[in-house]
Image 1 (cartoon, helix red, strand yellow):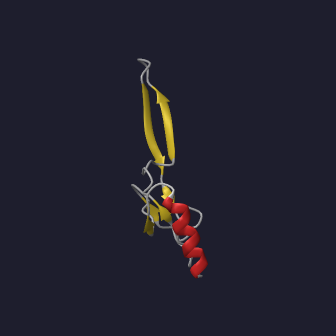
Image 2 (cartoon, rainbow, N blue to C red):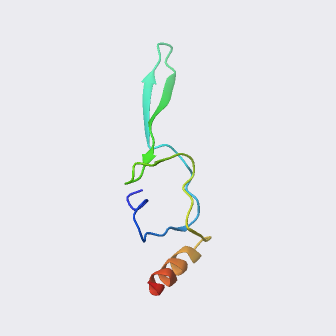
Length: 75
């Protein structure tokens, strides 16, 4: 998230799982646990991201590193 919204930043690999970043747990009187999402991802521009984060260059497995290095070589 630290690089989202930064000009020139590119993301390689697969989509993230889309889990929220801040959950709060509350113990209920019967012993059950209630978990409520209380925060979400926001990038440096203030844009809130919900669900999976998608890469600019989708790649699978170890190809992500090679694709990133190739992309860096073009800059």
